[in-house]
Length: 201
Image 1 (tube, rainbow, N blue to C red):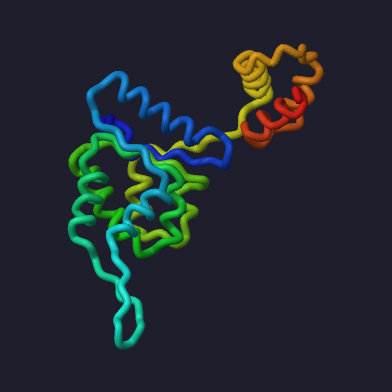
Image 2 (cartoon, rainbow, N blue to C red; image 1 turned 45 degrees about the vertical axis):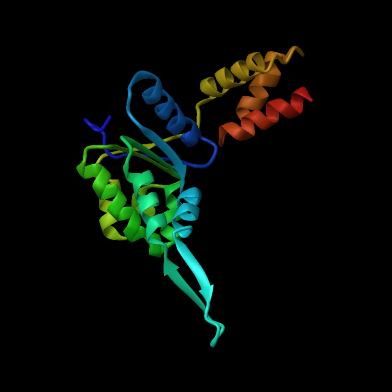
């Protein structure tokens, strides 16, 4: 990790296995090294960051006042920065919360400068982020950017056979039924799995 491809940016449409790849990377590193790994979805990152701020009401005006909880901020920083490998899922959501971009930029920079591995997953290329700060966009693209494509027909057939075997679906699936599913469910793996389940049911 962090020697050749840092950051590693994986993007592709929903249902093509980005989360699966992130978790596989995490499991491989955990089982084969002593490195500290953190996997987090962008939504959970936002929620943890927002816990650092307290909302109180002023008695006179009734307006809500936001104050920063320094202890919570330190805990958040320690949790995000005290890792060897950061796996961040759904990074595209960062584009919708401009106020969080500065904080994530600092986290990214610190990890990158300490030669810690960063792996990001998104539903689109960094070049397609319209509301992302330029400095973040350039950092996302300075490593290896990988586009995940929908599976080919042969791979879809392999997936169908694997799913049938894994789930012990004892009903015999004729080959023409498998081919029909593989020919018509071409966009993503979840649609393929759903079709298998419906036919079996």
